[in-house]
Each structure stands twice: as structure tokens, then as C-alpha cells.
Amino acid sequence: MRLLRLSILGGFSSVLLALALPNELFGWGNPALGLIALAPLFVALASTRSFREAFLVGAIFGGLAHGLSSYWLWFFKDFRFWTLGTSSAAYMVVYGCMGMYLRGALKRTGIARTLVFAMAWAVIEWGKSSGFLGYPWGLVAYSWNTVLPATQIAESTGVYGLSFALAFVSAALGEILAPPPGRIRAPWDKAAERPMRGRLRFLLPARPVYAGNRFLASGHLVVSAVLLLAITGYGLIALDKVRTPRGFVDAVMVQQNVDSWLGSESENLGVSIALARKAIAGSAIAPDIVLFSETTLRRPWNGFERFYAKTPLKDPLAGFISESGAYLFTGAPEILDYETYEATNSVILINPQGKQTGTYAKIHPVPFAEAIPFWEYDPFRKFIQDVVGLESGWVMGTERVIFELPTKNAGIVKFSAPICFEDAVSTLCREFVQKGAEILVNLTNDSWSKTESAEIQHFVAARFRSIELRRTLVRSTNGGVSTIVGPDGRILEILPLFQATSRMVRIPVHVDETTPYLMYGDWFAFFLACILASLAIILFIDDSTSKKELA
Image (cartoon, rainbow, N blue to C red; front, side):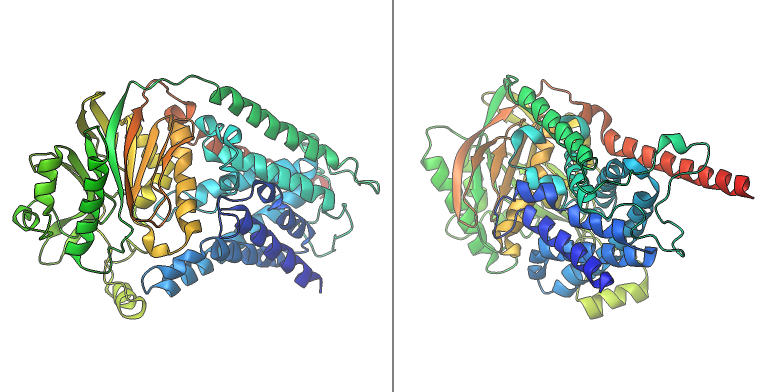
């Protein structure tokens, strides 16, 4: 019965987190639930009697939290078992191991354990968002995306500073609800809560036994609340700063809302052209650039100019580009080998004369969907092809490209183009800006998700890039969220979800700020990781010293 109760607590925490993030019930998330989402998990892990129980609690939390918040992966072509099922199973293992680590930390770090939990949570989110298998979705900070003052801390600490603060509040609430020392100790439990006995015990005093009303435990909540208020105050000052753009880019943003995986290539392209023409005709301003979405073109531009000179039949693309007098920026494949059909998922820039002036191939793939590890090994490749149904993935790019766009108002504007998933990858976007990008332009096709929450979750993750780097973020998508976000995270323009529409917009160019995050990257999460590593060493040394003294 006790193990069932712990499992329910872990599951309840995952439900709270899923509801705190953008979902079909709370479209933009629920900040109040973000404050308490991890409290049941804290109580459950603090109440476990063994690492086996902690693994179970963590696995239940991880699998459900991922499955409930990213349930829209079920609609990814015909690979729902692979995209949602196997990823949920993988997260059960990852968070099961996390549960064991957190249990050990909660049992051994005494009065500081709420702080240690918050540090560990921020580091865990950093780890799950980084590297080839990085998946920067489901971070607790995203629940506060609408609390704009609090999000401003991202310019210094990245998104993980806000995650740390929210996890600290949840842990403080959990500390009030958790059983006092001694109540759950078992003789076989090697990590049972106990004061440190070695020479370093003064660093981490044992938790006091709270007398009835948990008055002392509320001190953790006061400290965490003060921290969150301080972050919010910092954000209010940051938002009050006057930011003047050096100029503007006039652009047509096209949201065609057609499934590029289905239907006629010519008809789908015709929808985009018609929408672009409508926006141009309805404006007195001539655009500098027309923005289509990812995968709008199904074949390259170079080598297919004659095809696009007569496709679509009623209004060929080449003719539209020439008549608009604007550059076209769109998604299109680049074929590397026509025999094996190796191709990159790319975006291309075409000038009004019909010449392709730049191309960028996606560097960071969606793991197991766009790039499959161990593909070079025949047994694994055969399994993926025959069982999963994936033929192959895209070939990844290697160069961080900066495009140059001539404009009427701002001269030559340099921009980079993280593709789809990439605008959620903070390290890549930071590298683009370091290379000189003045604007981030994201082309995305998430229309396959069929849910508004999936579109908003992607946007929320990307929104933090504008704050971290103090640059304008432009998102031109198939179904949403098509938007312009200012350098403080404010939404300047937004198109309605899942509607075929277009709009002439003005994109401000901001280049006058260099943030701590731009200079030092994920220094905050790395710093916390170093503290946790040092703490683990201290505990190990202290245990060794204690055993020798007892001997």
C-alpha cells in the first residue's frame, strides 16, 4: 500500500507538470501549477525506503510527464509507437536513474536538501536539453512563459535559472509535507537520513525534527519565495529598458496551413503564392522578403529552375518571385546524391532575379526522426526499416550559415535560420548570434501535430531565445505559431493557429545588447553541476572518514 501511495504521488506530480505546461486545457500553460508541480515528487522521493523504490517513482514520473505533455507525438506520420512509445520508455529509464540520485541527495544533504533538489532539477533539465539526443521540451520554466518579468532572468542564466527557482518553491512545499527525520528510516537502508558524522559535517547540518506545525520547514518556502520575487524584480527593471532598433525589415509572413506530406505539390505551393500575393496587394509597402515555411518546396531550386518557371501552372513560382521584387526565403531539400537520394533538410534564399544566394542545412536533428543513430550498422538499419517503417533520416549540415538580406530601411541585415526544432536549442541559436546574426528567422512545419498545444509548446521553448540573446525572433510556420517576438519576449505580431493566412509585417533589428548568456552560455547550469559534483565528493570523503574513525 505504501509503495502504491508513492507511485500515485509520482504520477500526480507528472499530471501537475503536464497541466502546468501549455496543453489543451490551459492553452498557454498554468503558472500556479508550475509552482507546485514537483512538490509531490519531492515528497515521494523523500519517503522512499530504497533506491529501487526511488527508481520506480522516478520512472513513473518521467514516463507519464513525457507522454502526457508530448502526447501529440502520436500524430507523427505512422510512427507513433516509435516517436511516443519508445521515447516514453526511454524517459522512464532516465528519470528512474534521476529518482535514485535525488533520493540519495535528499537523504544525505540535511537542511540544504530543498536547495540541492532545485539545483539537481535545473541540471537535469540542462542535460535532457543538450547534445545529440537533447529534447528541450517539458521544462518546468515553460509554465511561466506568460509571466514576462520572471522570464527576463534568461538573459543571464538561460532558461535554467527560472527552472531552478520554480523547483526550489516546489521543494520547499514538499519539505513542509514530507515526513520528519526518523519516521521512514529502516535498518537496511544505507542512505537513511542521518546527520553527517565526519569532519565536514558542519557544511550540511542535519534537518531539525519539526515540532508539529512545521514552522521551521516554512523557512524554506520563505527563502524560495524571496528568490522568485527577486527574479521578478530583476525582470521588471529589464523590461523597463528602452530598446531602439537600428532599422526594420518589411516582410510577408505566409502561413499556408496545408499538410506538405499530403496533397499535390503544385496545389500546395499555389496556396502559398496566392496568400503572399494577397498580403502584398493589401499593403502600400513593398516587401524586402517573403517568408514561406519549412518543406514548402519538395525539390531543390538549383537545377529545377525550369520546373518552377511553370509550376504551379496558374501562377509559377519563378514568375511570382520576379514580380514581387522581393527575396524569397523558404524551406527546400538539397540533394547530395541522386542515386542514394541523400538530402538535407534546408532553407534557401532566392533573390528577385531568381538566383539562389544562400542555403543552410539543418544541423541539430530531431533525434530518431530526422537522424537515426547507428544507421550505418546493417542489423539496426534493417530493424528500423522493417519494424519501425523509417527508410532513412536527413543528412545533417555542418556549417552555421549567416544570410545577408538587402533592405530599404536597415541596409544589409544579417540573419540566421534555425530550422523547426532548432529554435528550441539555445546553444545553436547563441552560436548563430555570435557569428553575427542580427535576427533569428525560424521556418517550421508542425502542422502534423494536429493540436494547438503542440504548436504553442514549440513557440514557448523558442520564445526564450529572444530573451537570452536580446534579438528579434521571427517564426514563419505552416500551421503556427507564426509570430514576431521582440528582444524582451513580447509578442509583436501573431497569426491565428491553423488558419491559411498571410500578413505584411515589420521586423525590428536589434543589435545593441550583449547579454551574459550570449557571452557565457549555460554557465549557470554548469556552475550548479560543479556544486553538485563537489557535494558528492564531500559526502564520499566524509563517509570514508567516518568509517575509519569508527573502525
